[in-house]
Amino acid sequence: MKAISIICALTASLVGPEPCERTAREHKKLSGPWTVARAHNDGDELPREDLMALAMIFEGDTMRVQEGGTVNERFKFILHFDLKPRGIDFRYLDGHKKGRVDRAIYHLDGNTLKICIQENPGGDRPRDFNACKGSQRSLVILKRKTE
Image 1 (cartoon, helix red, strand yellow):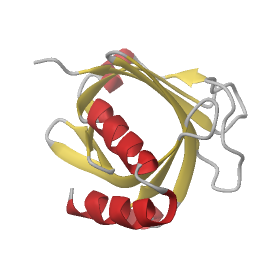
Image 2 (tube, rainbow, N blue to C red):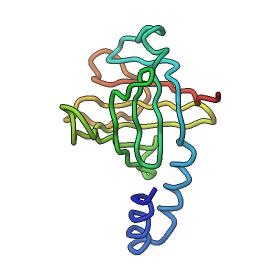
Image 3 (cartoon, one colour):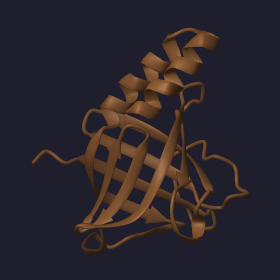
């Protein structure tokens, strides 16, 4: 949260407080654990049994992917409210992809979160929520964990 406060203070000094307040509100909406209800990768739907142990946890401006209790990947994310649908960039924090940024779009509707990610670093940000064959995209449908 300290990093968010610093970023907000710097941004507010340049463009006023509205963008930071909006970002903080959206971070709060995304905050917490989400289970993976469905996932498609480059045209293929992933089997439900492969998804059952997966979770995505949003905290502030970070997100981590866990399988069981093990963290597989960690990201910093930046929201783009000026895009329709809204954009989100994920920057890998660890591993062989460290520093790489995957561009994505997202749609939050209550306890359902859809994210479509362009997994080709040179590819364009998705404009719609599909991950058809050859697109090099993943589409993930998340449900807020309520327990």
